Amino acid sequence: MNIDVGLVLPPIIVFVLLMMSGFFSGSETALTAASRARMLSLEKEGKKGAARVVRLLSNQEGLIGSILLGNNLVNILATSIATSYLLKIFGANGVAVATAAMTVLVLVFSEVMPKTYALNNADRTAMSVSWPISILVLVLKPVVRFVQLVVRGTLSLFGVKTEADAFSPVDEIRGAIDMHVVDGNVEVEDKHRLGGVLDLKELTVADVMVHRKSIIMIDADIPPDDIVRQALESPHTRLPLYRGDKEEIIGILHAKDLLRAIMEAEGDFSSLDVESVKRKALFAPETTSLQDQLDHFQQSQSHFAIVVDEYGAIMGLITLEDILEEIVGEIRDEHDVTVEGVRPQPDGSVFVDGWAPIRDLNRAMDWDLPDEEAVTVAGLVIHETQSIPEPGRKFVFHGYQFEILRKHRNQITGLRVRRDLGL
Image (cartoon, rainbow, N blue to C red):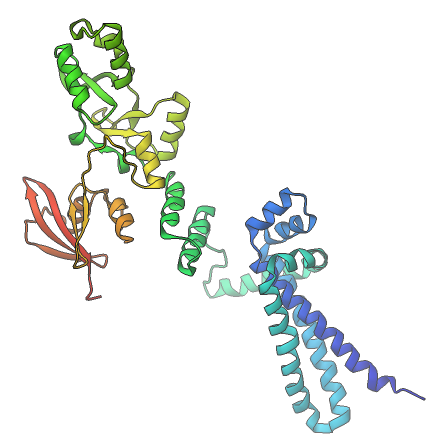
């Protein structure tokens, strides 16, 4: 029995080329969908396939260019062979038959099927195809380089820049967190905690410090029994000591040190020597990032610092707890004074004290008011209106309505904030 090779061989070649096309399509999808974090973790565990994937993803332009070049070559070759083959069988109608047949075959078996599988098994597929794809990238590197030069040169003639915008790893992590929150895989509270960690390098101590107007200080020149009384009445364990002027901080009084001194004096307050009890004050410039201040606290084994401006004037104070609260949210104990700066109302609005930080309002209400230009809600209103508005005035900006409720001298002390439903 004689077999006509001319009739049998072309379909076999087309079938092989379609399988190669499916391999390229699936590889592209798997490698672009693979988790780089997962690959880095597996690479540390010694997985060679993961290491190859990481190397391939480090040059995505070359990777995608090589796969597309290989995919287009096999698709065009398969279509040409199929058309030539079907012309011999169907004559002039062979072109239409080849077009219809190849469209269905390429779409189903070379695109949809391999990409669907790759999407559902991205990491495993990426590691499986990493070796042959690495060889492909190496072989086609000169051709891909030439194609890239042609593309960039052509686009530059039209003033199109081909350099991608640089996204920091932090931005990528934020995007991943937001995506998982939308998908329901990450709780909003977890988003705030993760975001708080990422914000440490972007926020300064001035953004979260206790303002100088809210600092409880003790005059070191008053009688020792008054010092003890004021220390006991304070909800804080660390209190700044000043002498003469409140700008002249001479040290920090710690409640435990004070209690130890009282014990040693057998309860005789008059014999207390504040100078021997106080600790050295730690100062922090207001432009210091929270990450740097956290590192400084760890190195100095301190939990408390006075915040000063460029002229050395006291702006406020920052504690280790303030920094940790940016990550885990408000921390309260049995001695904290509860001051509700954000009070949600049944109608959906929120009563906000003017000093309340914008970040606290955003966290409490899951809002997105900007905090780049101002730290407090009152500061945001003043920045946007370029004035100190009177009570009763209403403003709308950033998608929210602000109503001024109270004002004391030049300070906005109370506001009502709600989403602007007119948007």
